[in-house]
Length: 319
Ligand SMILES: [Cu+2]
Image 1 (cartoon, rainbow, N blue to C red):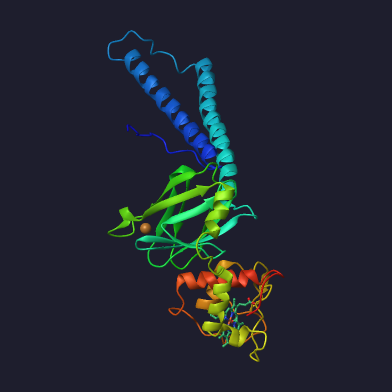
Image 2 (cartoon, helix red, strand yellow):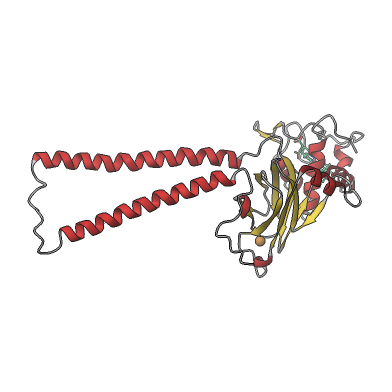
């Protein structure tokens, strides 16, 4: 079949707003280019060599006043246009950059050359992401090796995925369907094959997908397992005799650090606490926690983080 769409599907809540900006900018740039071209041609013809055009004006008072008015116009008009562009784009960008608090989280690890995805409820996927339509989805992403970029053209969202850091991206699909997922940052030989699909499902189909096959242990439960496996519970567990902070209720709260500063315990903070324990030492504790750099994989770190998140609320279970 003849199928050559010039424009990707508009399948997320952001897509229309991003496209509106895109076309407005294209229109403004087009109009300016047109005006400049027309002026160029008109003046080139009017003042060509040997033409009878009047070249005497420009020095008297009257003409100076007119010139001044023209100059003010071409300074103020673009300024006004730029301010409108700025406020409009900033408004869209704020919404683009701030995931709604009720978003469903999915954890993403990019590696040469695949996407590994984990749902908090435990499902794992490779190069495929199943999501429900009509609910905001927040991705927490990191890379195991080099820089990648998570790009879903139909959703108009793209975000770099960096080693050693967590970046986030959120979107809300408008209609069920299968959408391309690309790596948009050159990442080595097979970069062009680092792609996948986002499969947006109606709510009921999504529930069915969650329940198909053997339902896996949740990420938090796997994280609790790791927490014992790596010996964290030996210091942080309820029965520990080591002077180490209890991790219940830590996530999302400010933590007082040695030296008087404080940080919010987000994903990055938990990650750094595990890999670079000397970076942020909690006030009132000795820096005796060993670094787990090189011992815990990115997926396992995300599971431990999911576990620490789960015990931030009262529903959490202690290992
Ligand atoms: Cu890549």
